[in-house]
Length: 215
Length: 124
Length: 207
Ligand code: SF4
Image 1 (spheres, rainbow over the protein chains, first blue to last red):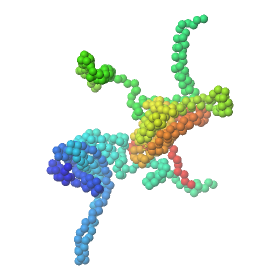
Image 2 (image 1 turned 90 degrees about the vertical axis):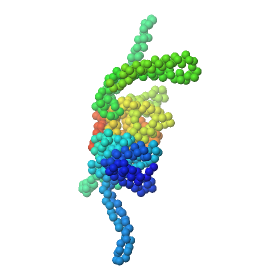
Image 3 (image 1 turned 60 degrees about the vertical axis):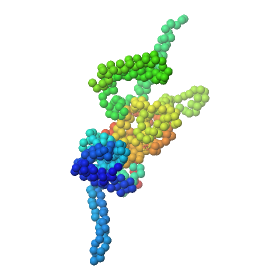
């Protein structure tokens, strides 16, 4: 299989205007992925599926991720002249990345027996919307519905976007990090941490002094 | 004194009536004296595996359903004949082979006829 | 009718070949040896329930091998497995559709409290929030022996039910409800979150 860089170059040549970034994965698995932009997502996906050398005809997995706001610290070594002496100084720059929601697709080629190539699409938390890749890979249909159900990402172009696990009347998106479960903590035999905090709100008030001493 | 020849039948009918009616009477008396009936909206609703029930339990089936059932029955019987045919296939004389072919032909003809009549179309 | 027979007199009569019983005993004896469960399973615990019904553990010894596919013919509901919030209304509706007398066994950590999924967003924290449970079996999953034990406990309970008097069995009590309200799907959770007539969690006491 071609490397991600080669794939990226060929996508950019084939789909004019597509913005592709390589997201590096620092873990030992080193499964790097391609971040593709929302407008050209379907064209890029179609290219990945139909290109004779790639032929990613099987989308094995679609999943959602909720990234919190995070700060990335970058340290750059520079030489600076301090008091007339040249010294190595570490310059730390901080980059703030606001939180976002992400849909991740794992693609395999059954024809060529290679894969996976991982593609990601990002969207903001408010009014989350991505273009659906179900028209390209039918196997994404139920999983995109699940992401819609649990993360609240609307997949535009999806044939049948309804909730799949939770009931239709449900309004929250339980896999988002800002989800707060309903307050049904009235009976917790072994509460701890957060659960203890919430269970305490159901405890009866401490008896006052006069109540304690029956006259 | 000899009994009437129908006497045994009368006894028979009597027993046959008492056996089913007796438990019913007992159950009715039990309900009357001990267990109060507790009907309710959900309890009396049509059973639909716990989902909210829609409509009545007694519904009418379309007549096409019976056509389906009849066609199924014919081919079901055909399968019963085909199994021994397949088992004895190697040792069959030509006459038997030809006659099973005629049998098959008749059935296939029936299928073609039913198909042509549109009996296999569910939605009409 | 529900009065106890003198034990000495009874054994004396039995020695003479006369067997004396009361209506209450006869009634309870018949009921406790033919508890027909409703046939449904919700999660992994159901596998243990199936094992209990199979020949090795053989629930037929207790007269309960007849798993009924319809609630109309069932006496016992074995809530075997995780009750998700989406499933809870259906369970309550099935319970409502069972004729009296009816009993509930909550089998496994999930059915009694939500178990490993207790803090999840979609799992009910115990079926006893909506319907009265007679026997709880802890375990994840409980072994078939535990389910058999629950059966024996239930038989003991049925054996002690009274036919008349102030302590008579619930299903003979005209005032005791036979149906419980089915929770509705709400915007954030089931509405109501628990039925206060059924679910009375222990109060934390401070001294
Ligand atoms: S209690 Fe354990 S075994 Fe039983 S349903 Fe829950 S998770 Fe499965």
